[in-house]
Amino acid sequence: MVVLQTRDVTTDDLGFADFFAQHNERLVRVSVFLTGHAIEGNLAQESMAWVLERCDLVSAMDDSEGYLYKTA
Image (cartoon, rainbow, N blue to C red):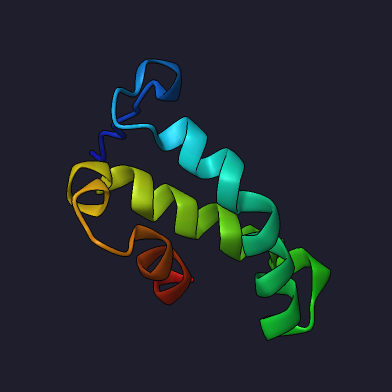
């Protein structure tokens, strides 16, 4: 049985909600540009989810934005 873990972004003390707001729109545009398909905006969502799961690690990086785009 797979147990899914969730995280409440509204109480995120590492600033993920701000990070998301700052980078999501551009990441969606880049994802669509790279894939050539509007539906691939989902790539941005998956990348953000990946970063959120590793928020502690990513927030300590010098270039967290670069990590986000590399993940995408």
